[in-house]
Amino acid sequence: MTDGCAGTRCVSCGGRGASPLLTALLTAIAVAGCATAVPQGDRGQGLAPVPATGDYRAIAVVAVAGTAKSGFEGIDRVDPADYAKAGTKALGTGASSTGLALALLPYAYAAGPAGWAAIPFLFAGAAVAGFFGGYAYSASAIGPSAQAAALKATMATVAVAGTSPGTLAAEVADDIARWTPYRAQAFATAASPGAPAAQGFDAVLQVEITQFGYAGRNGGKDIALYMTAEARLTDAASGQPVALRGLAYLSPWHAPDFWTRRDGALTKDELARASRTLADRIVEHLVLHTPWLPHSDASLQGNVCGLLPIAAPGAPTRVGAGPQPPMKVDSLTPRLAWAPLPAPSSAPGAGPPAGASAQDLRYDLRIFEELDWAPGALAYGREGLAGTEHRVERELKPATLYFWTVRVRYFADGAPRATRWSATAEPGTLAPLSPQAVYASRRGPAGIEVAGCAPQDFTPCGCLDFIPVDNWFRFRTP
Image (tube, rainbow, N blue to C red; front, top):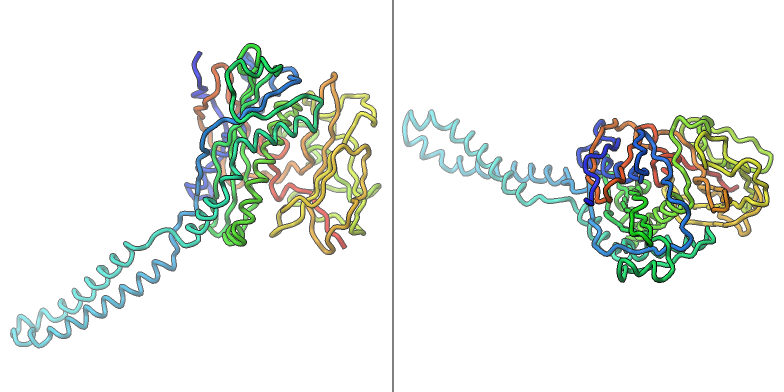
């Protein structure tokens, strides 16, 4: 058996309106985010179905040892002001050279007619040589901008704790224990291939953080943090691979100084959030079997992924194109509501089974405070709510924008399941970048294909492992 999936096809995005470095990064993120396992014999195009893995009820979550690669795509730019300074210095050098030529003028006059004819060339040559020589000397000292250096220093300072595969494994195990009746335990390393089975685990879930760093756009004026990871599920008894899942997280975009201020507090918070988000997605996809929904799925025609959030019980909610305007709430402890079920889907297992009673449904709610017009820290959260509305139990801040999302968990055929967190399916996240077919050589076991995503399926209900800013529902307190 070989170890690799070279030559498998994945659809990514590249090129129009982005720097080559950012295009390469988005291509890598798209490849990682759309990678999942397809059972042997299923070679269909488009979104991959949930692997037919069954339900493992005791899972050893193993952190893959290794050092994640740090990347700084699009931030190693040179400050244009440095070139302007070099030009100013060059003008000064050219002027000094012209002064030197002026000192040689008496000798030119003494040389007679031939010297007189050489005077214009003497002055011009001195000015040109001085300018370009001075510019070359000044430009040779130009390096990456102070902004880029500050970002790299910040990441180096805070990344150790935020990029630990051990932390990711612990978060995955915690999610399994909280959201399912299954047993899960995190391990720093696997003692031996047969150890999990000997300890009563029927599956091994290996998790690894593969890359993290900053990405820049608009000439480095906007910076986002990204993280990629990989999860591999293996049957403990047979040692056979069951599923491979690549994941990617891209934070909201902020100005460079947002990431470095207060000793890199935002960078530290976003690294933790990236790990937390990817852990959620690993459990959703490989344990709760939450499916990907293609853009053409019937449930997305209303532009809503998962449950429809409602501003208040009984209040109509209209979901239009583009970012949604903040819902109106009339209290610092607002009563939020949501639809009991997602819209009907053509995908199997996309929601509670027909006939599921309200007593079998449990809802999870998350509210994030606004930071620079994007979701910031988690301000409020509840899990296992029994109804379709909830009064926030402590006061939120006045006149503040909040981002919120909700999902439903349930049982189907005796196994725990969940929908995706509510978001809008449009706008398309990677536009205006154009799609580009790429080939990924992955470390996955033979027979597991890296499935492709159609360009229009890079949505919170499809390939994406995070909710972009424009796809959040939001409300503002009075």
